[in-house]
Length: 442
Image 1 (cartoon, rainbow, N blue to C red):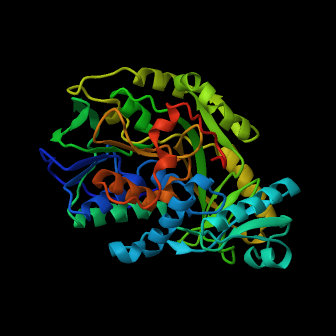
Image 2 (image 1 turned 120 degrees about the vertical axis):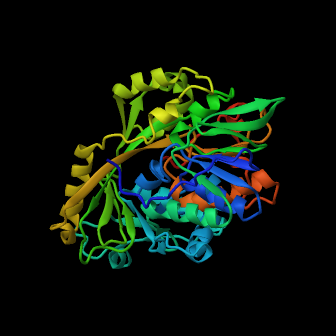
């Protein structure tokens, strides 16, 4: 069972037309709806389950610039600017606060790599530094075995995933957007090389623009309009604890664990070095594309063959618009967490930080990260289908970059000056021979 998300009620009526239909009610879909509605467009957001039901409520809650891929520097810098003003902008709390984030460097090679990253980030206007000794201890009091050094980005922060997207969705509604939950988009109707309508389980919505922000479902959605997006799923597990008195305020990633303080006084904790990748039919389809990422993450990847293979094989079959879709059959992807890895991480954290000795694991859950071969998202129009925009493949980085991504989506739909250069996020990079490779990993 996933975390409890602030509920967002559905608008009662599916309209016959809209300026833009957004598929997916996660952080990307809701921020896109907000910024599009603020520009006066008639926006309909369709979510097959509930708002933030999948990875947008199941992530760590980090809003970070630290250790980002350089191709994301401009967009994440703008996203953090938007996060800092988000609560005032929407008149509600997302739980965002600036706390700083640390990445531990446990050997000389990693320390040198992080130092190089600091220099590159400075050129993009992102301030970070390497800490050690007393300076590091100041931010992590009580750490009995601190790393030799750490990358520190003081302007990074956190928000509350179970609250943020719902608050933004409600703000979009106040600006005029319609929010339809339990309303799957069965497919996109096209004609003459352009979008004509979105076909939902509640009816047809005529529209010239569809934004597909479907997270782990995006490849399945696009395949029906002839777009072969290279995308695979990574299962990420998280636990939350009871309140901890005297625990660290900044977030920390280390080899054995990662954590961030929650607004309720507990902590969100994950294993910092384990990524479980289910083997599915598309694993073979995209094996060559993802080989560089596998090599980069080989020590931390756990390949698993299980029921997911059969499930996705069955989901491949195309259905007509008048048939119930696979999206209606699975309203929320709710994979079982890998509690063994979580227990290892929690035990390692308790050994390092005495403040956690009396903490209890209150809940654990998992979600599916949607990954691209270069671990950089697609935020892009589709060249072959006018009016179709894709915003997916955020590779575990989507929550923090969400407001920037949503703003860029709105820019692309309306033809406004983009908040960041969209070139690194173009869909065509996977088809034009560029073969982009990962630089920072998940």
